[in-house]
Length: 286
Ligand SMILES: CC(C)(COP(=O)(O)OP(=O)(O)OC[C@H]1O[C@@H](n2cnc3c(N)ncnc32)[C@H](O)[C@@H]1OP(=O)(O)O)[C@@H](O)C(=O)NCCC(=O)NCCS
Image (tube, rainbow, N blue to C red; front, side, top):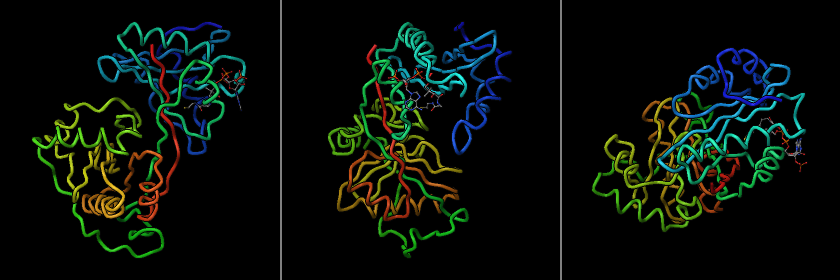
Protein backbone atom coordinates (compact mmCIF):
# COMPACT_ATOMS: atom_id res chain seq x y z
CA UNK A 1 0.00 0.00 0.00
CA UNK A 2 1.29 3.43 -0.99
CA UNK A 3 0.43 6.58 1.01
CA UNK A 4 0.96 10.02 -0.47
CA UNK A 5 -0.56 13.47 -0.87
CA UNK A 6 -3.83 13.38 -2.89
CA UNK A 7 -3.59 14.51 -6.52
CA UNK A 8 -6.15 15.71 -9.07
CA UNK A 9 -6.09 12.33 -10.86
CA UNK A 10 -7.33 10.64 -7.61
CA UNK A 11 -10.54 12.68 -7.56
CA UNK A 12 -12.86 10.52 -9.74
CA UNK A 13 -12.08 7.27 -7.89
CA UNK A 14 -12.52 8.88 -4.45
CA UNK A 15 -15.75 10.63 -5.49
CA UNK A 16 -17.08 7.31 -6.83
CA UNK A 17 -16.56 5.19 -3.70
CA UNK A 18 -17.66 7.92 -1.25
CA UNK A 19 -21.08 8.67 -2.84
CA UNK A 20 -23.11 6.69 -0.30
CA UNK A 21 -20.87 6.52 2.77
CA UNK A 22 -23.72 7.39 5.13
CA UNK A 23 -27.51 7.07 4.97
CA UNK A 24 -27.71 10.71 3.90
CA UNK A 25 -24.87 10.38 1.36
CA UNK A 26 -21.54 12.16 1.92
CA UNK A 27 -19.94 15.58 1.49
CA UNK A 28 -16.57 14.21 0.33
CA UNK A 29 -17.53 13.85 -3.39
CA UNK A 30 -18.35 17.59 -3.46
CA UNK A 31 -15.20 18.64 -1.60
CA UNK A 32 -12.46 16.33 -2.85
CA UNK A 33 -11.49 18.38 -5.93
CA UNK A 34 -11.00 21.43 -3.69
CA UNK A 35 -9.04 19.41 -1.12
CA UNK A 36 -6.46 18.13 -3.59
CA UNK A 37 -5.58 21.77 -4.39
CA UNK A 38 -5.40 22.44 -0.67
CA UNK A 39 -3.42 25.44 0.44
CA UNK A 40 -4.66 25.40 4.03
CA UNK A 41 -4.52 21.68 4.81
CA UNK A 42 -3.20 18.29 3.76
CA UNK A 43 -5.25 15.57 2.08
CA UNK A 44 -3.63 12.14 1.83
CA UNK A 45 -4.66 8.98 0.04
CA UNK A 46 -3.79 5.32 0.43
CA UNK A 47 -3.48 3.39 -2.85
CA UNK A 48 -3.50 -0.29 -3.72
CA UNK A 49 -2.29 -1.17 -7.24
CA UNK A 50 -2.32 2.57 -7.98
CA UNK A 51 -6.02 2.95 -7.08
CA UNK A 52 -7.13 5.16 -4.16
CA UNK A 53 -8.80 3.12 -1.42
CA UNK A 54 -8.72 5.65 1.44
CA UNK A 55 -8.61 9.40 1.96
CA UNK A 56 -8.38 11.77 4.95
CA UNK A 57 -7.61 15.42 5.58
CA UNK A 58 -6.13 17.62 8.28
CA UNK A 59 -5.75 21.41 8.57
CA UNK A 60 -4.84 24.13 11.05
CA UNK A 61 -7.80 26.01 12.54
CA UNK A 62 -5.74 28.38 14.70
CA UNK A 63 -1.99 28.89 15.04
CA UNK A 64 -1.66 25.79 17.23
CA UNK A 65 -4.92 23.81 16.93
CA UNK A 66 -5.41 21.24 14.21
CA UNK A 67 -8.53 19.54 12.88
CA UNK A 68 -8.86 16.17 11.16
CA UNK A 69 -11.82 15.07 9.07
CA UNK A 70 -13.04 13.32 5.95
CA UNK A 71 -11.55 9.87 6.61
CA UNK A 72 -13.11 7.39 4.23
CA UNK A 73 -11.86 3.87 3.63
CA UNK A 74 -13.27 2.02 0.61
CA UNK A 75 -15.90 -0.46 1.92
CA UNK A 76 -13.94 -3.43 0.48
CA UNK A 77 -10.83 -2.45 2.45
CA UNK A 78 -12.23 -1.68 5.92
CA UNK A 79 -11.15 -3.48 9.06
CA UNK A 80 -7.57 -4.17 7.98
CA UNK A 81 -5.74 -1.20 9.44
CA UNK A 82 -5.87 1.18 6.46
CA UNK A 83 -7.28 4.05 8.55
CA UNK A 84 -4.50 3.68 11.10
CA UNK A 85 -1.83 3.65 8.35
CA UNK A 86 -3.28 6.87 6.87
CA UNK A 87 -3.74 8.58 10.23
CA UNK A 88 -0.09 8.44 11.30
CA UNK A 89 1.41 10.61 8.48
CA UNK A 90 -1.46 13.10 8.81
CA UNK A 91 -0.73 13.53 12.52
CA UNK A 92 2.93 14.09 11.67
CA UNK A 93 2.02 16.68 9.02
CA UNK A 94 -0.22 18.69 11.35
CA UNK A 95 2.40 18.62 14.12
CA UNK A 96 5.05 19.87 11.68
CA UNK A 97 2.58 22.62 10.62
CA UNK A 98 2.61 23.93 14.20
CA UNK A 99 -0.36 22.22 15.86
CA UNK A 100 0.02 21.27 19.50
CA UNK A 101 -3.31 19.49 19.58
CA UNK A 102 -5.51 17.95 16.90
CA UNK A 103 -9.23 17.33 17.26
CA UNK A 104 -11.99 15.60 15.34
CA UNK A 105 -15.72 14.96 15.62
CA UNK A 106 -17.37 11.54 15.62
CA UNK A 107 -21.02 10.57 15.91
CA UNK A 108 -21.44 8.54 19.08
CA UNK A 109 -22.94 5.58 17.19
CA UNK A 110 -20.02 5.30 14.72
CA UNK A 111 -18.31 2.36 16.43
CA UNK A 112 -15.65 1.70 13.74
CA UNK A 113 -14.60 5.34 13.80
CA UNK A 114 -14.47 5.44 17.60
CA UNK A 115 -12.33 2.28 17.65
CA UNK A 116 -10.06 3.81 15.03
CA UNK A 117 -9.47 7.09 16.89
CA UNK A 118 -9.05 5.33 20.25
CA UNK A 119 -6.36 3.13 18.70
CA UNK A 120 -4.54 6.20 17.38
CA UNK A 121 -4.53 7.56 20.96
CA UNK A 122 -7.30 10.18 20.81
CA UNK A 123 -9.35 10.79 23.96
CA UNK A 124 -12.95 11.97 24.14
CA UNK A 125 -12.91 15.55 25.36
CA UNK A 126 -16.49 16.80 24.99
CA UNK A 127 -19.84 15.08 24.59
CA UNK A 128 -22.01 17.26 22.40
CA UNK A 129 -25.49 17.41 20.97
CA UNK A 130 -26.39 18.95 17.65
CA UNK A 131 -29.95 20.22 18.11
CA UNK A 132 -31.73 21.08 14.88
CA UNK A 133 -35.14 21.62 13.35
CA UNK A 134 -36.67 23.05 10.21
CA UNK A 135 -38.05 26.59 10.49
CA UNK A 136 -40.19 28.89 8.38
CA UNK A 137 -41.69 27.50 5.17
CA UNK A 138 -39.37 24.50 5.39
CA UNK A 139 -41.06 23.41 8.60
CA UNK A 140 -44.17 21.23 8.54
CA UNK A 141 -44.66 22.39 12.09
CA UNK A 142 -43.42 25.94 12.43
CA UNK A 143 -44.51 26.20 16.03
CA UNK A 144 -42.64 23.13 17.18
CA UNK A 145 -43.13 19.57 18.35
CA UNK A 146 -46.86 19.18 17.88
CA UNK A 147 -47.50 21.79 20.55
CA UNK A 148 -48.30 25.34 19.55
CA UNK A 149 -45.40 27.50 20.69
CA UNK A 150 -46.10 31.18 20.55
CA UNK A 151 -43.23 33.59 20.02
CA UNK A 152 -40.76 33.56 22.89
CA UNK A 153 -41.16 36.45 25.38
CA UNK A 154 -37.42 37.03 24.82
CA UNK A 155 -35.89 38.56 21.72
CA UNK A 156 -32.45 38.02 20.24
CA UNK A 157 -30.76 41.42 19.79
CA UNK A 158 -27.26 42.20 18.56
CA UNK A 159 -24.80 42.47 21.47
CA UNK A 160 -22.02 45.06 21.66
CA UNK A 161 -18.31 44.54 21.09
CA UNK A 162 -17.53 45.96 24.53
CA UNK A 163 -19.54 43.11 26.10
CA UNK A 164 -17.29 40.50 24.46
CA UNK A 165 -14.87 39.99 27.41
CA UNK A 166 -17.76 39.55 29.85
CA UNK A 167 -19.56 37.14 27.54
CA UNK A 168 -16.43 35.05 27.00
CA UNK A 169 -15.56 34.94 30.70
CA UNK A 170 -19.12 34.10 31.66
CA UNK A 171 -19.37 31.28 29.12
CA UNK A 172 -15.94 29.81 29.95
CA UNK A 173 -16.85 29.39 33.62
CA UNK A 174 -20.49 28.35 33.07
CA UNK A 175 -21.87 24.78 33.05
CA UNK A 176 -22.21 24.97 29.27
CA UNK A 177 -18.80 26.46 28.50
CA UNK A 178 -17.02 24.02 30.80
CA UNK A 179 -18.86 21.02 29.35
CA UNK A 180 -17.92 22.28 25.85
CA UNK A 181 -14.30 22.47 27.13
CA UNK A 182 -14.23 26.05 25.85
CA UNK A 183 -14.64 24.83 22.26
CA UNK A 184 -16.73 26.67 19.70
CA UNK A 185 -18.16 25.00 16.62
CA UNK A 186 -17.73 26.87 13.38
CA UNK A 187 -19.65 24.66 11.02
CA UNK A 188 -18.49 21.18 11.98
CA UNK A 189 -15.01 22.21 13.22
CA UNK A 190 -14.13 23.09 16.78
CA UNK A 191 -11.40 25.26 18.22
CA UNK A 192 -10.86 27.09 21.50
CA UNK A 193 -13.06 30.18 21.74
CA UNK A 194 -10.86 33.30 21.90
CA UNK A 195 -11.72 36.88 22.71
CA UNK A 196 -10.99 37.76 19.08
CA UNK A 197 -13.70 35.30 17.96
CA UNK A 198 -16.33 36.89 20.21
CA UNK A 199 -15.29 40.41 19.15
CA UNK A 200 -15.39 39.41 15.48
CA UNK A 201 -18.89 37.98 16.03
CA UNK A 202 -19.99 41.28 17.58
CA UNK A 203 -18.59 43.28 14.64
CA UNK A 204 -20.45 41.13 12.11
CA UNK A 205 -23.80 41.12 13.94
CA UNK A 206 -23.36 37.46 14.95
CA UNK A 207 -23.22 38.03 18.73
CA UNK A 208 -26.67 37.98 20.30
CA UNK A 209 -28.06 39.03 23.64
CA UNK A 210 -31.23 37.18 24.64
CA UNK A 211 -32.47 38.15 28.11
CA UNK A 212 -29.46 37.37 30.28
CA UNK A 213 -28.25 34.74 27.80
CA UNK A 214 -25.92 35.06 24.79
CA UNK A 215 -25.29 33.29 21.53
CA UNK A 216 -22.82 33.42 18.65
CA UNK A 217 -24.04 32.48 15.20
CA UNK A 218 -21.65 31.09 12.58
CA UNK A 219 -24.14 31.41 9.73
CA UNK A 220 -27.68 32.71 9.30
CA UNK A 221 -28.99 31.47 5.99
CA UNK A 222 -30.07 28.94 4.79
CA UNK A 223 -29.07 27.41 8.12
CA UNK A 224 -29.15 29.53 11.25
CA UNK A 225 -26.17 27.94 12.98
CA UNK A 226 -25.63 28.67 16.65
CA UNK A 227 -21.96 28.03 17.32
CA UNK A 228 -22.03 29.05 20.98
CA UNK A 229 -24.86 29.39 23.47
CA UNK A 230 -24.62 30.72 26.99
CA UNK A 231 -27.79 30.32 29.05
CA UNK A 232 -29.09 29.03 32.36
CA UNK A 233 -31.69 26.44 33.33
CA UNK A 234 -34.54 28.86 34.04
CA UNK A 235 -34.04 30.74 30.75
CA UNK A 236 -32.89 28.01 28.37
CA UNK A 237 -36.28 27.20 26.82
CA UNK A 238 -37.19 30.84 26.17
CA UNK A 239 -33.68 31.59 24.88
CA UNK A 240 -33.73 28.74 22.38
CA UNK A 241 -37.29 29.75 21.44
CA UNK A 242 -36.04 33.29 20.75
CA UNK A 243 -33.29 31.87 18.52
CA UNK A 244 -35.90 29.82 16.60
CA UNK A 245 -37.94 33.04 16.20
CA UNK A 246 -34.82 34.90 14.96
CA UNK A 247 -34.09 32.10 12.48
CA UNK A 248 -37.70 32.33 11.23
CA UNK A 249 -37.56 36.12 10.93
CA UNK A 250 -34.30 36.01 8.97
CA UNK A 251 -35.65 33.56 6.40
CA UNK A 252 -33.57 30.55 7.45
CA UNK A 253 -34.77 27.06 6.52
CA UNK A 254 -33.16 25.32 9.46
CA UNK A 255 -31.72 26.09 12.86
CA UNK A 256 -28.87 24.04 14.33
CA UNK A 257 -27.37 24.62 17.75
CA UNK A 258 -24.21 23.10 19.24
CA UNK A 259 -24.91 22.13 22.83
CA UNK A 260 -23.09 20.09 25.44
CA UNK A 261 -24.77 16.86 26.54
CA UNK A 262 -26.26 18.49 29.66
CA UNK A 263 -29.77 17.33 30.37
CA UNK A 264 -31.52 20.66 31.13
CA UNK A 265 -30.31 22.40 27.98
CA UNK A 266 -30.93 19.38 25.76
CA UNK A 267 -34.48 19.07 27.15
CA UNK A 268 -35.07 22.78 26.50
CA UNK A 269 -33.98 22.28 22.87
CA UNK A 270 -36.30 19.28 22.52
CA UNK A 271 -39.22 21.31 23.89
CA UNK A 272 -38.72 23.87 21.12
CA UNK A 273 -39.11 21.08 18.58
CA UNK A 274 -35.45 20.25 17.92
CA UNK A 275 -34.16 16.77 17.21
CA UNK A 276 -30.86 16.07 18.93
CA UNK A 277 -27.97 13.94 17.75
CA UNK A 278 -25.09 12.93 20.05
CA UNK A 279 -21.52 13.46 18.84
CA UNK A 280 -18.19 13.85 20.60
CA UNK A 281 -15.07 15.90 20.05
CA UNK A 282 -11.94 13.78 20.44
CA UNK A 283 -8.48 15.22 20.84
CA UNK A 284 -4.85 14.16 20.61
CA UNK A 285 -2.03 16.22 22.10
CA UNK A 286 0.88 16.26 19.64
C1 LIG B 1 -14.06 4.50 10.31
C2 LIG B 1 -13.16 3.94 9.22
C3 LIG B 1 -12.39 5.10 8.60
C4 LIG B 1 -12.19 2.95 9.85
O1 LIG B 1 -11.32 2.52 8.84
P1 LIG B 1 -10.64 1.04 8.86
O2 LIG B 1 -9.49 1.04 7.93
O3 LIG B 1 -11.69 0.04 8.67
O4 LIG B 1 -10.12 1.01 10.36
P2 LIG B 1 -9.11 0.00 10.95
O5 LIG B 1 -8.99 -1.24 10.07
O6 LIG B 1 -7.84 0.75 11.28
O7 LIG B 1 -9.88 -0.45 12.25
C5 LIG B 1 -10.04 0.38 13.34
C6 LIG B 1 -10.73 -0.41 14.44
O8 LIG B 1 -12.15 -0.43 14.21
C7 LIG B 1 -12.62 -1.76 14.24
N1 LIG B 1 -13.69 -1.89 13.29
C8 LIG B 1 -13.62 -1.78 11.96
N2 LIG B 1 -14.85 -1.97 11.43
C9 LIG B 1 -15.69 -2.16 12.47
C10 LIG B 1 -17.09 -2.40 12.58
N3 LIG B 1 -17.88 -2.44 11.49
N4 LIG B 1 -17.64 -2.51 13.82
C11 LIG B 1 -16.86 -2.44 14.92
N5 LIG B 1 -15.53 -2.22 14.88
C12 LIG B 1 -14.95 -2.09 13.66
C13 LIG B 1 -11.44 -2.60 13.82
O9 LIG B 1 -11.61 -3.92 14.25
C14 LIG B 1 -10.32 -1.88 14.52
O10 LIG B 1 -10.29 -2.16 15.89
P3 LIG B 1 -9.41 -3.37 16.45
O11 LIG B 1 -8.03 -3.20 15.90
O12 LIG B 1 -9.49 -3.18 17.92
O13 LIG B 1 -10.04 -4.62 15.97
C15 LIG B 1 -13.96 3.18 8.12
O14 LIG B 1 -14.80 2.24 8.76
C16 LIG B 1 -14.81 4.08 7.23
O15 LIG B 1 -14.35 4.58 6.20
N6 LIG B 1 -16.08 4.29 7.63
C17 LIG B 1 -17.00 5.14 6.89
C18 LIG B 1 -16.65 6.61 7.01
C19 LIG B 1 -16.59 7.08 8.43
O16 LIG B 1 -17.41 6.73 9.27
N7 LIG B 1 -15.61 7.95 8.69
C20 LIG B 1 -15.40 8.56 9.97
C21 LIG B 1 -16.31 9.71 10.14
S1 LIG B 1 -15.96 10.52 11.68
